Length: 324
Image (tube, rainbow, N blue to C red):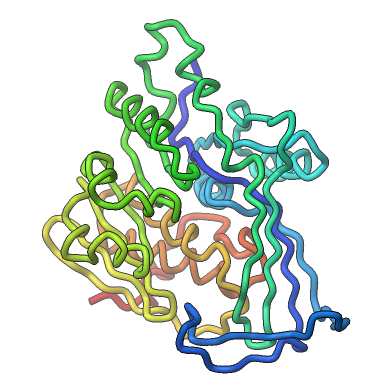
C-alpha cells in the first residue's frame, strides 16, 4: 500500500500566457482589480510574449510539495489528448506520483488562456474540461478491500476545486475522517456558491483553510470563518499581503516589494507553501514567511510553476519577511 506525505486533489490545466502591450487599460470600479482592458474585435494585435505552463490548483500545489522534499501524489482528471500527455510528463518530471490521475475518454484536458497587459494585469479564459469531471467512483479507496480502504493514502490531503460536486466533497471528507487524514482546503468558486449552510460541516473538519478576501467575504468574512478550521485560516489579499488566524491569534504578513510579472498561481503557491511548512512544525509565523516567499517567487516569474521555490526557505530568507 503506497503511503505519501500529501495527496493533492483538484484541477490540472494547460496554461498559455499571452502578454501584449496592445491591450489598452483604463480604470473601472467594477473590475476585480480596478483595471479593465479593451481591444477591437476584428483587429489583429501583436503578442509580445508567449509562455506555456502546467497549471491548476492540484498540480500547482503538488509542485511546491514535491520540490520541498515531500512524497507527493496528485489526483486529478485529464483528457485523452496531447495536452494531457504533456501535463502528465510535467508531473513526472517534478517527481509527483501520477497513479491516481484519471483519464476522461471524451472531455479535453482543461485549458486556460491568460491575457496580460503591459503592466501585468490579467484576464483569464478557461475551458474546465476534464478537470471538473472527477469520477469519485474511481477514487482509489473505492477499489480496495475494506481493510485497505481504512488505511491512509497520505498524511495530508490538499484539496482544491472539485467543480462544486457535494458528493465528491462528502466522499473525500468522509475518507479523511475514517482514516484520520488531515485536510488543507482551498475551495473553488463552485464550492463557495453553496454557501455557509452547506459548507460549514466541511469547514469544521478542515485543518488549514485558504481563501482570498473576496472568497472569504462571500462566506461572511474573517470573523465568521476565521475560527472554524481546526488549525489555521489563511486570508490572502494580493499586494496587501495576507492574514492568518490560528490558535486564537491573528497575524498579518506584508507583501514584499518586487516587480509583479504574473499573479496566476500565486494563491496556490501561498497556500501550499504554508501547508508544507505547517506539516513540519505548526508555527504560524514560520509558515506565513515560507508561504509569502513561495508566492513572491511565482509573481516574479511567468507561469504558475517557474517561480515556485526549489527547496524549503532558510531562516535567513525568512528574516526579510515582515510579520506583525
